[in-house]
Every structure is written in C-alpha cells, then in structure tokens.
Image (cartoon, rainbow, N blue to C red; front, top):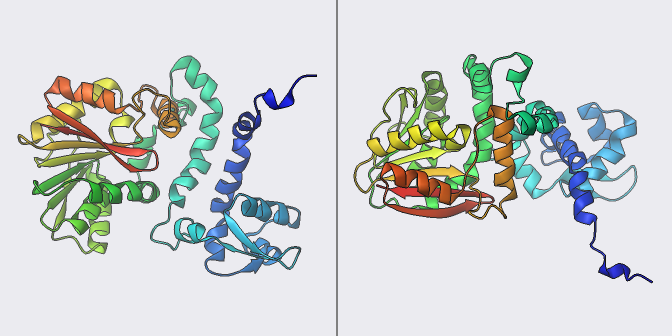
Length: 344
C-alpha cells in the first residue's frame, strides 16, 4: 500500500488557484465601505447588510468569510451575532483613518482585477492590457487630464507608499545632507515624512505642473510649507532640481530600460559628489527566487505599460555603475519593499 504521508500536499497549489476568491471578497468589502460603515461600532449582520445594501442571501456568507479571513471580528454566533472591525481594519481600511490604504484596493478592484484576466495575452504579445487595449488613453494621460481624478489616484497611492516612506525617513542616514528632491513626488508625501523627522533638511517635491496644487495642499496640511516646496517640470524633458539626495519612489519601474537610464543619468547630473540617488521599490531579490510581490509587480508593469519592468538591487547597481556612481547599498524598508541607494 502506498504511503500517503509521503505524497506532497496540494494545499498551496489549491490555495493559490482559488486566491482570487479571497481577493474579490476583500476588494468588494472595501468597495461597499464595510470597514468604514462599521468604524468603531458593533452591528448584527442584518444591520450591517441593510446599511451597505446587500441582499439577505449574501449576508452571513459574506461577513463570516471576512471573519474567517481575519478581516472582521464577530461576537457570538447566529443571527444575533455582532460584527466589528479588527484593530488593523480600523487603522487601514476605514476611510476616516489617516492611515487608510484602501485607495489602492479600490483601484485594484476597479481596474486591475479585470486587466489581469488578460495576463496570457500580455505574456504572448508583450503589450499592455489596460485602457490602451480598448482604444482609450493610457493610464497617465487619462489621470493627468482631469484634476479630481488625478487627486483621487494620488490619494490611493499615498496609502500604499506611506509605510515605506516612513521607514526610509527613519533608516537612511541624512546627517551629511542638507537638501532632498523627490522626483515624481506626487502629493509630497516622501518629502513631508522626511522633513518631519529631519529638521535640518530642505525638501523639494518635483512633478508635472498639474500636480503642484495637490502637493501644496497636502504639504500645508502637514504644516511644512516653510520647509517643503514644490517644483514643476517633466523629468524626461527638464533637468532635475539639484539636491544632495534625489529620491524616486516607485518611479523607475514604470519605464523601459532606455527611460530608466535617462532618469539615472539625470539624477547623476543633479547630484554633487557624495550625493545619493535612492530608488524605493518592491525590489526583486538578486537571485529572483524570493520576492513574490516584486515579481508580480513586474508582471503588473507588463499589463500596464508593456515594456516597463521591476528590477533587482543588482540590476540597479549595474545601471548606476555605467553612469558613474561609485558605492551602493540596499536598505530593507517594509514588507516587500526596499531602498536601493547609489552614491556619487
């Protein structure tokens, strides 16, 4: 008789294969505002179902699935049981929280969930599978054409970036430097997180002209308008503002190798001797065996842009060496993300 214990367990295969079920439940809960409706309250399934407008058939399955997945808590059993937020749900998934990360989940649900259905075509053709495929404008063209939509997108990215930018502000040694320029600075979040912790630094958030009013509003709300300024320009057309440290948070992975090299050269030219270029990304590990999220993010760049891709610390070092940078390090930040640093 065959020894059943010697067989490999198919559990991880099935868990990944059915993973889209779990993903869609969480994304739908964010779309419906489950965590925001709950806030710090406790509600029965019927009460919560009425507030978010779902049919009685789905109430117990939907909310109990969120309990089993550890995204909600539940007191008691049966129809009288009361649902509430977990501490993490209250902090990260309630829209009223300053640390809300649900904006990126909303974008995953509204855009990427359906685009990833076409991953096979992306792999066969090397072409984007986003709005461009359907005859619409590219993501960035569409976003920058309309200020409210651009502001919404940047708000979504803020939640995703904040944890990494906070970690960078705490882990990088800024003691030798006086100025910082964040390229593709969006809402100015990286600059404000660094400025909060390092009072000797003057920071500049550099992005396209339509972004400036969004950044200025966020910088003023942080009370840092006297130390964080905005600068407007196109980083493919204009020189970068000169600074001792130049940062690029999730910027390089948006482009093909030719444009990556353009940005690295532009940073080199804007830095003084001893200055630092910092790329914050979900860096793929050098052996390309471990960082699943980084590799999936690179596939997402294929779906969004075609020839754009994520990269490893070793890739970054090679590219920066070609331009003239002399010293390198990688600083782990949070989760799958790290800061790749090149010193001039």
